[in-house]
Image 1 (cartoon, rainbow, N blue to C red):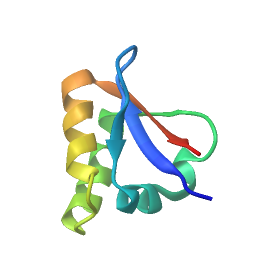
Image 2: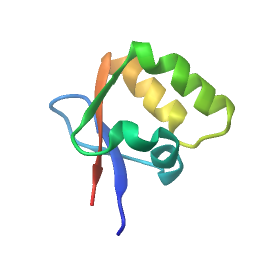
Image 3: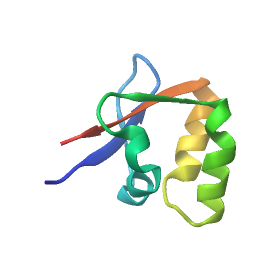
Length: 74
């Protein structure tokens, strides 16, 4: 089964994120939408340092919008 990871500030359009980030986040985004905020930036910084695609994009979205929802669509 294929799954894609997305983020969006509320109530805007969804934005696709790379599968590599979906795998790195693991169970943090299983099921319902998960809200990411400034408290998650250190974790995302580590992912970015490890070369995980999409971590910088998600970090930038959090800095711009303060909070973003991240979810999977099957």
